Length: 291
Image 1: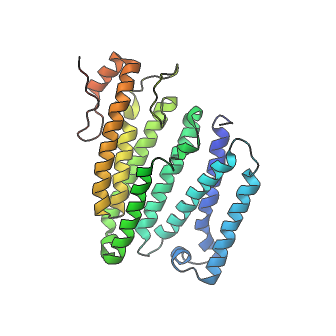
Image 2: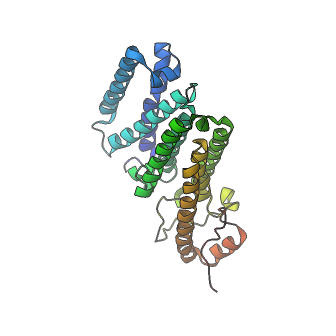
Image 3: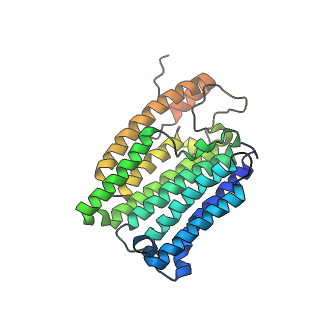
């Protein structure tokens, strides 16, 4: 992408904030935040429709003819910002959907920050896929399953979704996991890539400082606990178990694949690092090396 990542980062940030501005609509109406989402009334619906139309017009005017795929970047960032803004509206209300609002904010910030950090940190690997919105079919099915479980259980066992201490614990896991992952991305710099590399570039070095001194795969550790935390936040018992098992299996296979490449790239240097530092994930030791 053009601009070396700087223009993409600025475009995405502007569009994200633009989408998130939906959270300010109740202030213009002098209405409490949940009223706009749960029961906005005629005035609220009109204000919301006008706001969305204004956002779309701003996107077209600002990036409709911009080169380098800027409009596609802006659309995705704005969508994530809008989801975050709606999550904020739910979060600051007292409706039974408040915890789902926390989840919406967590999910949208996670995906947007993946793109933003990549744009700042490693612009050469930047693409629309850096948002991770189309990560995989399985990932999308997992997300949809969690929404379905939350909605069904909310109507059958409404009190089950109002355990604030449990949702708060899940939110802390989410924040910890996302911060750990972004710290790993920033520490690795241009060495970090969303796709496992099969060829070593000239600038590729083995990073062992910072969070990589705690865990060999801190970005995976962060994502693992982030994903489980989202389901604790939603008080989704079925998806919590499913996410734990599926994520554990995915990262076990991913780490083994990645470590074979890292051993090929760095040889004895990585083997010594592997002996010294754990993966950070429970019961996952990484690829077995026969000497």
